[in-house]
Amino acid sequence: MTRRMHFRIWISFMVVLVISVIVSGMVVNLVFSKPSFAENAHVVADYFVADLAKMEPPARQERLDAFAKAFGLDMGLYDSQRALIAGAGTPPPLPRDLADHKPFSHDGHTALFNTTTGYHVTINHRPQFSHASRIVFWLSSFVGLLFLGSYFISRRLTRRLERLQRAVAGWDFAQPVDPVPIEGKDEVARLAESFNSAARRITALLGQQRNLLASASHELRTPLARIRLASQMMAESQAPQKREETLAAIHDDINELDGLVNDILLAARLDANPLEHGELELVDLGQLAAEAAGAFGYPAEGSAQIRGHRKMLRRLIGNLVENAAKHAPGAPVRVEVSQREGSVFIRVSDGGPGLSAEERERVFDPFFRGGASSGAEGYGLGLSIVKKIAQRHGGDARCLQREGGGLLFEVELPAA
Image (cartoon, rainbow, N blue to C red; front, side, top):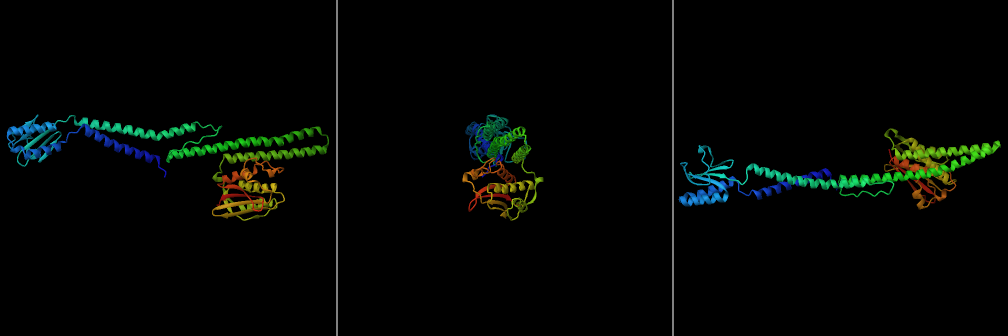
């Protein structure tokens, strides 16, 4: 299950906050371990009510001194006439109007206990540190623990981002790219997955461009060499018929170059630019299949509609039919359009010599020609363009072995 990073930071902060409060409270209790004023007043009052009233003055004073020393108190014991009958340290005086005071009351560090027997006990706590000092110490320890804990947590969370940044900065697409390690299941992990996916796409695109440039340069040399040779022969020839034949050959080579350049530009555009929404329209694939198949005298069956680029889809079907006509001359060719479970299928099958399993895997690579393609026209970009157009429409293209021999090219596209 994916754990969101902001939730982890919030939980971590809450944990640090709770631990800081608990630990700082324990530290304060260890440093300031004296009982509270109210606790002292209750203990002293209960003791005095039970025992001191029955004691003789010397024993009463001795007991009072023992308690004052044990609890760090200034104490005073007054009778009902407001007379001080025993004291320890600096006995706090009684307030002027005792009628306004409850049986127990306190003001700051001074507490007053009025017993039911008419005695009054005043207590003044002598703290080791002032109240302000306690607050400052508690806040300092709390803030210190909170700062250290939060820094450790945030550093631990951002360390993965730093490792990700260093790994991405070290990428060199001229060499095989090592994937970024994926740690955890939060946004940082998904960011690393996105970087790896982008690196794979960039590497594949650069590889395709390098192969395209290398293959294109090779393919362009052949018609250029023929044009150069033909122009030399035409310059040397004086026979009008020979010059016309040579000129016609030059025109054919120029047309071949023009078609090759157009296909290279289309392949590059399909790699670089996705289809814009404004270019899409409702296209009847059955009609396009009938037009493409009819141009070669083949039958076409079925009909289906998708939202797509009409010109590119016409090129897709035309390339498939033209490929079957070139590589399976004289063999039966069938063109079929069907729809099933939200997908549209375009199938072009032929009864030609077919390809091996390894060749079928590479048949959509630019400028690839199988062993059975020797002598056939073309330069190996038609099927590559078919696959690119299918992918730009959210689909894919496959090359399968046809039952009974030959090949079956199948394109799957999302239905309208």
